[in-house]
Image (cartoon, rainbow, N blue to C red; front, side, top):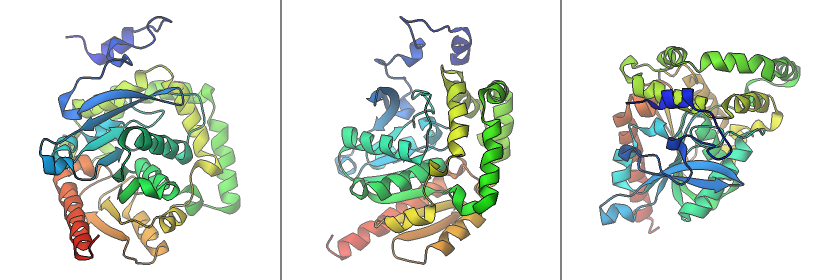
Amino acid sequence: MTSWLKLQDSYHPSPTHPYPTLMKRTQALTRPDLGHQRFWSWRGWRVRYTYLRPTDPAAQRRAPMLLIHGFGASLEQWRSNLTAWGQQRPVYALDLLGFGHSQKPGILLGAEVWQAQVHDFWQAVIGQPVILLGHSLGALVALTATARHPAMAQALVLLTLPLARQELVAGWIDRLARGVESLFATPLLLRPLFLAVRRPNFIRRALTGIYQIPDRVDDELVELFTRPTLERGAARTLCYLVKSRTQPEFSDSTADLLQQVPIPILLLWGTQDKVLPTAWADQILSANPPHAHLTYRPIPGAGHCLYDEMPGAVDAALQGWLGDLDNHQRAHGQ
């Protein structure tokens, strides 16, 4: 059987057939464990999303969950979670603009663009308060969206949370770093680098360095990170992403955003995270005095991709927290 990767390698776009067969706008990608996949048009760009609806009537009435993936990933990153969560309540997940099988635009991207995409998707497709869950960059987007549009979420779940650039470096050091980075954020340098790093062997090595459970870095995981890099516009979008990251307005500080969110927040963090060390969690907690809204729970032994490395532990922490919220609301007649 011809693989998706081989189709991409041999594919040449044309005005009458701009996307390969598996990416037709009018046809959902078929993989039952990822739910019912569809495409939605946002500001003229193609956005992929999926949804799962439980069979149990009681579960159908629970608040939906909306999932936002991390940097370089896609809705496939929830491969270990969608089936279980989709039995507990309606679940939606989408690919952020520039990632996964959403369109790769030639624009500056950042938390504000992505939070607007998430909010507009929620408004157009879901239309009721959700449990908003994001991982890493997706957690920053979820936090920003909730701060901008409090009515869209009744609870917020953050699987790690990157600090904003201005919280890590400031003043002349930040200005110097931005200047140096902008010199390297040029297509002449980034395009050859992109061609090298999108190779499956390179991606496998990178994921092996991130995952703390090597067995989880299987062929499926490597392929789901590789496929989007072969789409039209992927190299150009990388150039814009790197340039966007050097801009001061890429995101607000997490400390400011957390103070603007009045709903319950669960922060989960793998204790063995090598990408965003738990010291970042300590900094977030120290910058936000203890209050009833924020609950922090480390996941022992998990790395950066805790949702895929230890899905059972993440689900147990999540369901336990949601159960506590339900009990609290019933006790107070909410």
